[in-house]
Each structure stands twice: as structure tokens, then as C-alpha cells.
Image (cartoon, rainbow, N blue to C red):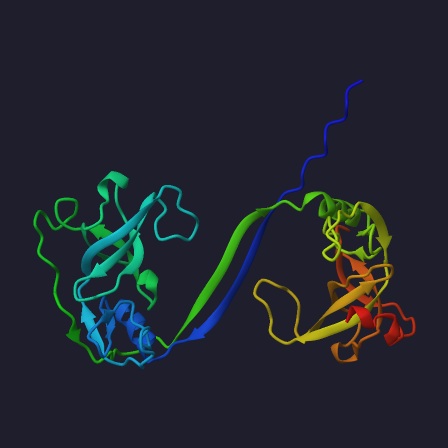
Length: 329
């Protein structure tokens, strides 16, 4: 008799991102606007050290820095690491070196990419220069990358340092300065849910919500984690909970998220499903946002494909007593 093959592990791409708009102070504004104009600025400390990229405060003394200087667009590699598998959105699509470059006139190094044919073409102490992006907007990406200077690069052998060889004073003023930027924090990876969450997701396809009970403290966790975070023992006893539940706490969302087709304001809540000892997250619909309250009894409204609840709506039952869910708030 042949044993049945193990079930195929669930896998799915997962993207976690949080883009936010950042306001710039006078130093960072001048630095990024300068890059747009193909000018690299640093900040000079009271001790004479030139920081590139510039900082608004001296990292050694915490003194405010406003003395801006222009440094050269060429410099020296102080250390490097080869990247043979560039990831999406990195500076170059072909293999390249991450390098720390001390630009002429600077005392600190700038991190960026070096376009080189291979690791054998990169070395500490080599001369490099900035390759500017064709279209510049006032961002660090206005530096497309660095490229070799000298025998390895377009300047020819024994290329002299590019001007200015020393830091030259600069007032940091440019027309139409950049005052804010959007910082995109993003993580792309393949998620494998594991045994417990895999069973939970499989049950959702049948419009059931399944948790797991700890054999020690008897708490039922939804979604299941595979182990009890309190007792540290495996949870293998599966329990069907819900489908109805109680709102334990909630928040009103007034800012529309990118790529989310939900009109604001809307309510996002912690919902303790009947039989569960851990509330899960869910959106509340079918009721005006200002009528959502703690203790509201709700039930799931499933997506068109029936794979998971789209939101929760009121059941019409009386509100749950606070004592019945106070331990889950």
C-alpha cells in the first residue's frame, strides 16, 4: 500500500510597504536640490570635518550644522562589496558593486552603486566619478551610479581629481528647492504559512474559521500560531469558532490607503469570534462608522470567491456585556 503524498505547502507572494511623505530641513533640502542641479553639497563641522551626505547636526557634538560646501563629483573607493544578483528597484539591473566613496573635499564616504564589469575590476583606492541620471528630480537617485575614472574609465590614464578638489563654500540656494520627498519602505518576499496557518486558510475556503486550542491553558487562538505564546507548547487541537463575534475595540480610518478601493472614513476593529480567546482584525461595514461601538455583535460577509471575509456587519443581536469580552480588550 502506497502512502499518500504530503499536502503541498502553501506559498504566496507578499508585499509589505509603507510609503510616507517626509518634510526636509534646510540642509537636506539643499543637498537633494543640489543633486538635481549636478552639485554635491556637504556640511562642515566646527572642527573642519566635511560630512557627505550632509547632516543637520554634528554626530560628535550635536551642534547644529549650517555651513554648506561643494565637493567634487569624483572620489576614492574606501570599501566595497559585489552584488551579483540585483534586486528590483536597485540602482542597476546588471551585477554591480556597492561602494563607499569619499568624494574629493569630503571626510566621510557616500554609499552608492559602482557600474563595473566584474569584481576583478573593483578595488579599494580606485578612482570613481558620479554618473548623473538623465532625468533628475531632487533625490539620491539623481546619482545614477558611480563609474571608474582612470585606466578603467572614460577619463583616461592618470586622470586628475575633478574640480573642486577641496570643499568650496556654497550658500545652498537653488531655484525651486525640493522641500519634501516620498520615502518608500517596501519588502517583497514569498510567505509560507506553515501547518497551523495553512489549515486556517484551507478552512476559510469552506467559509469556516478554525483556531487551535492550547492543551495546557485551553485558550483558543485565531488565527492559529502553531504554539501557545503563553505556555510554549504546540497547539494541535483544532476548533471551529464563530462565525459571529464581538467588537472589542476599534479605530476610525480617515486616510485613504493607496491601491485600496475603500472609501473613507471606515472602521477597522478587533473582533473576538465566539469561542476564540484572541481577537482578530476586520473591517466593519453595513453600518455608519459613527455607530460602531465596543460590544457590537457582528458576522462575516464573504468575498465573491468565498476565500475569506471581506468585512463584518451587525447581526442585529443585542450588544454583548462588557464583562464577556473585557479580557480581550
